[in-house]
Image (cartoon, rainbow, N blue to C red; front, side):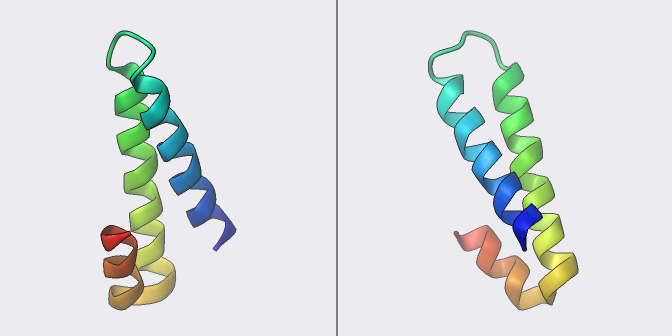
Length: 56
């Protein structure tokens, strides 16, 4: 659970930083971080938890 929340938080911070920093590298890392968070949610909590993570 902690890892999932950490990946979502890091992804959100990187996505917000992408607005201020030129280039797409932070956006790419943000997308990867959010994707890892969703995958971990599917693995740890099954289909229902994964879909809730996608909706959030």
